[in-house]
Length: 131
Length: 131
DNA sequence: GGGGAAGTTTACGTTAACGTAAAGTGGCGG
DNA sequence: CCGCCACTTTACGTTAACGTAAACTTCCCC
Image 1 (cartoon, rainbow over the protein chains, first blue to last red):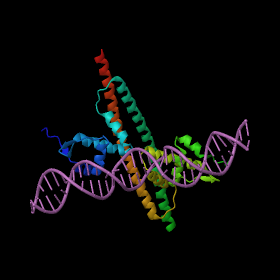
Image 2 (cartoon, protein in one colour):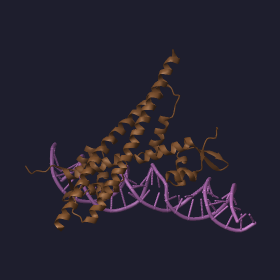
Image 3 (cartoon, rainbow over the protein chains, first blue to last red):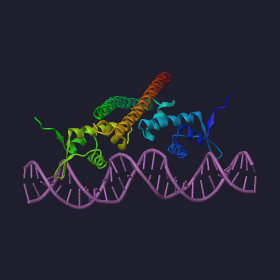
Image 4 (spheres, each protein chain N blue to C red):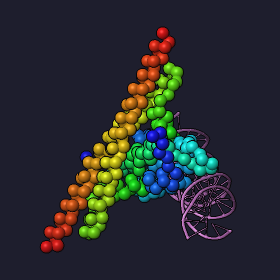
């Protein structure tokens, strides 16, 4: 009942469509620290979640350093007042950045919509000329 | 009355907070092609818009190659049917990617909200222990 | 007309995020 | 026992996106 599910590096690689090299690289950069059975890495569900976070960050254009910060922001911390204040500051910086990205995306979506409409129109025109 | 506004490379650099090196690099990569007066580059409002598009792409984590594609997608084209079909396909790929990014951002926003709440809670606890 | 300031080209340097290759270890089915 | 597969470490290679430095023209100002 307390058998926590674990993963090998190959399983995670297949699951998230990355190479094992990539996963080891993330560990090298201090983003992951799986258990070991002898030499072999054993990943917990927490490790799996961390990896998922990193890849989500990638999709949003974050560097690994940024993703590392984000992960640190999220996990519970017992700091002093100043550190907590600094943390809240960082969190709000990220939030502002995400707002900017939302704006950018919405504008781009509109433009792509336009572009598609024009392309379809161009096709219609072709049909007509053709007749 | 037909005096189209133009810009020097330095003006654009200051306006968008990038270096002139960066702007020349984009030209080298085929993303910009400003007029020349002698040696000197003269940028039109269209060039300025293109630069803005590139930087917006950057904020969303796009490579320069992707931004170049996006710019091509947006500007009017007179292609044949197959090319138009391909274009529409690409546009929809990008649209799907943007949807994924929207989802990612919303989840992340929620998590940062949680993180901030926990940080504030931790601060309150400090105050109380302190008393 | 000397000297900044802003423009130019050319070219080598740098960082992030892996790719790729070599060489070795551990389990396991036939 | 052998070969294969998945794992490991070490280390050099690669690409994108610029940074940085050198050496040069052009324009403007006093």
